Image 1 (cartoon, helix red, strand yellow):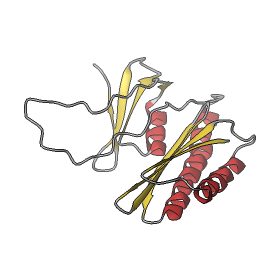
Image 2 (tube, helix red, strand yellow):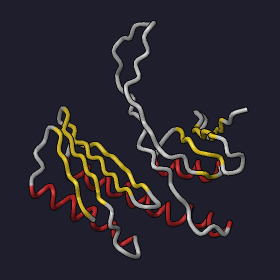
Image 3 (spheres, one colour):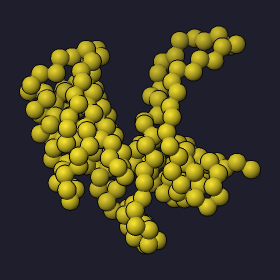
Image 4 (cartoon, helix red, strand yellow):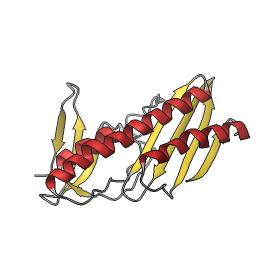
Length: 185
């Protein structure tokens, strides 16, 4: 794997770089052949809070995790644990589902994390500010697979193309912990 490590408000030293590469490199044991994708690591520091974001885009899978901690090395360990859980979940639940249905492979929609809730300044009632625009490919899948992918990414909602109806649909996590589906009429 190739590493692209960036630092915001922090200098990425050789020790930090080596630690990140060593820890994330351990994820290769979960794959038959080492992934050739580039690992994007963003390390930032805000008010004594260390944050690390790791994105590993692969052909059929997007691994993404972020973690905050007072200690950078602890944050790195926690983010690698999250990535390991995602890989194990990918290898068990999703593969089992597709083996049962006889489908040879699956494709994860490459949707980045949803925008984190930020403290908003008071906005004029007449103005609506769009602060971020995202574009991604909608992959055809059923609602059950969309829920699995939403949970793997840690999102509250997931937009997908329904493979049965061909229309764009949204699954979301309800406050009671169950799931909802929004479909056009």
